[in-house]
Figure 1 (tube, helix red, strand yellow):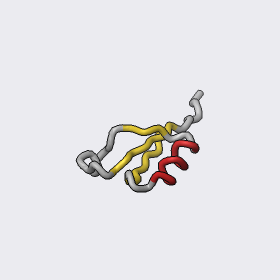
Figure 2 (cartoon, rainbow, N blue to C red):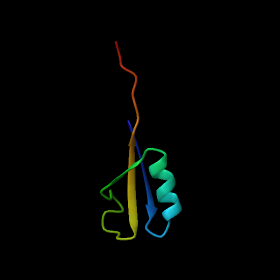
Figure 3 (spheres, rainbow, N blue to C red):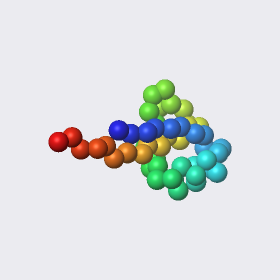
Figure 4 (cartoon, rainbow, N blue to C red):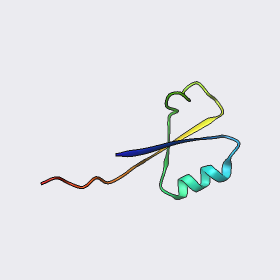
Length: 51
């Protein structure tokens, strides 16, 4: 499972918060892929193994 979020280039405090929380910057995903003001992040979550 992954969590995704988007913020703007004019929100450096949000970008720092997300990076400190373990999010990594990823290419912009829809509907933000053509927005130069958008910055997208993703964090992979561990999933329980099934037996």
